[in-house]
Image (cartoon, rainbow, N blue to C red; front, side):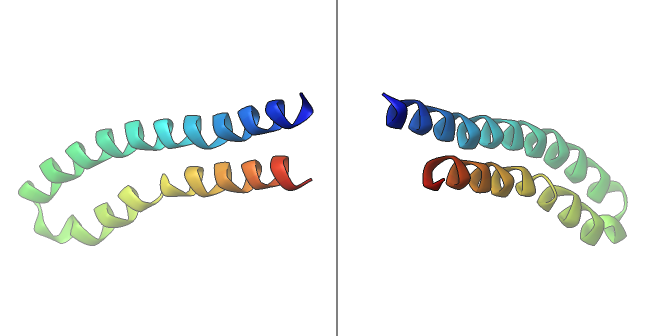
Length: 70
């Protein structure tokens, strides 16, 4: 039973963080395209802003690994 709860909590840690990241990147991506159309020099900044939410998935993976292998 304990193994099942660890697995479920690890899956939730990765799944919810991935869902939140996908939502954030969708919103940021659409705004970034609109901004880049108006000003081409914002391309580098927008790439960075799109990459920042990926850290949530990485942190979710770290939490999941801690939950499973502890």
